[in-house]
Amino acid sequence: QSALTQPASVSGSPGQSITISCTGTSSDVGGYNYVSWYQQHPGKAPKLMIYDVSNRPSGVSNRFSGSKSGNTASLTISGLQAEDEADYYCSSYTSSTTLVFGGGTKLTVL
Amino acid sequence: QLQLQESGPGLVKPSETLSLTCTVSGGSISSGTYYWGWIRQPPGKGLEWIGSIYYSGSTYYNRSLKSRVTISVDTSKNQFSLKVTSVTAADTAVYYCARHQGSGRMEFDYWGQGTLVTVSS
View (tube, rainbow over the protein chains, first blue to last red):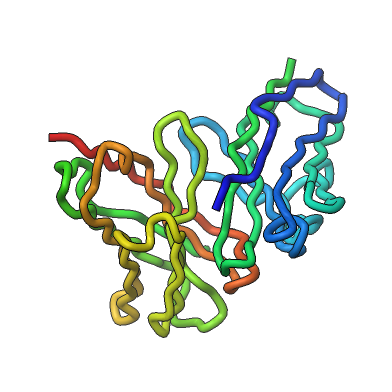
């Protein structure tokens, strides 16, 4: 199972919006609405930010939103804040009854 | 508040077996609603799902690791465990235990803090 494809890095200034893409295949991202997004700060465990493509867990800011089109899912962060600087990972359920992660994207807040 | 805590040796020799345990507190591993999984992250690299288990003992694994991995559960101790055989330097990683909803709903909503396992002689 190949990892989902994410850009290695993205950046934005405070207050701006950024979008991180996550590209898979029809056997994972395109075939199921089970895409999740995680935020990971250095030395910390990942934190669930989005599940089932576009749902936010309780306590996650509504500045974070998710969507999907075809085999590509996206995470959008609006009103960028310094604390959003972190690594972001997508994941998807697959047709093999397994889970695959993306390679991760480093977000830099300028 | 649910908490997960990984434990086990931080150093394992090449060709030996890596063994870790995840202790769950603040909730029952036998609740029937959740699955319990292992994820690892090599230093400076991305996340890799290893496998998951249901309290009944039903398991499913990452196909790339399946031949070397065993996940088991001990409901009496509210723990689940990971074994990886024939380890190499490529198995050096931070290992996390975490909880998810079900075989399709594989979003991990609670995580342990992670434990670094180094494979070296």
